[in-house]
Length: 396
Image (cartoon, rainbow, N blue to C red; front, side):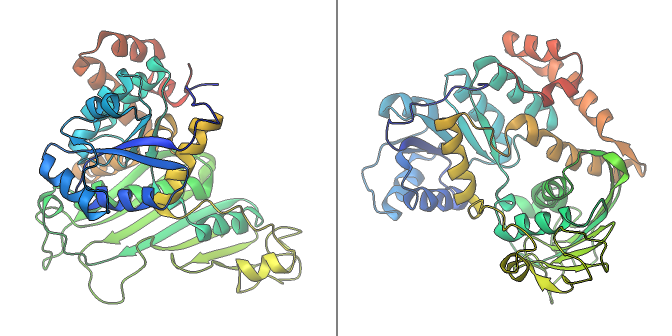
């Protein structure tokens, strides 16, 4: 067992939510609908905002305060859900882990890969679970698309188009790379999930259309090479009104014996080459052409994948199950690290107009993390890895 667990018969997992903004309130609603979780308190630097959030969900008088760890100690909570802004993820999560408190954090794990390495080391040192909520992995249709693609032989080409036009206001409008830094991590992480492989390098072009209302570059095309030779191409924009895609994006998986299409919202469809799919997702003789996964599953051609739950509710459910059983969850910091490394590598590639190796980003980040780390024991864990790849193998 590689992280501390809770007694399986101790009732709902008691949690403190840190961050009472709009996303924090979405998590509060998800907690209210999950029988396996009990809300013990809300922490926010603006305590009046935490009080407002408590009243909004119908529990006025719920314990609140400015410090998540102190609130856990005061209430007897067992875990923290970190829904603060990315810049606060490292200090909030590090304090919790060092206090012996497991953490479920909103993506990204931290503001930088270097800070994420620090948190991976802290989780290893303390034996506590730190899981990152990549909520868009928790989608029945994504799991179905992966199941279909698995029956088509080797996947070699994966692409996603993402075109939206949100007007958020606030910090995103001022970010240097709002699309890559705040959104594309979802699609990058989903690509890793669909391919079942790790990224090797990326060539990226980032830009800002003339009509964009963002200060930073709100559009990009990134071409990743993956282990085994597969390619993944992301093309996206956050300032493209009209005929918008799903928030998940519009996907195409091209494999040895056919293709899977997924519009991001509905069941994926598959076109299998005649007989090439064998006994997999498409069956023989082209029988899977154009059928949604539900139809294929009903005919016995594929096994319907187990539902992962939906969005943040799914990641909340997996986090609590992991704390009860010790089962390895998706999004554990050591596994999630490469998704953020894809983002930093893409941004570096765009700035320097060259292909960037993921390992180069990892190693530069480890050097930076070692130089910046103030906790000697955490620094010793990082130094003991030998290379940043050591962070990808949790132990404890």
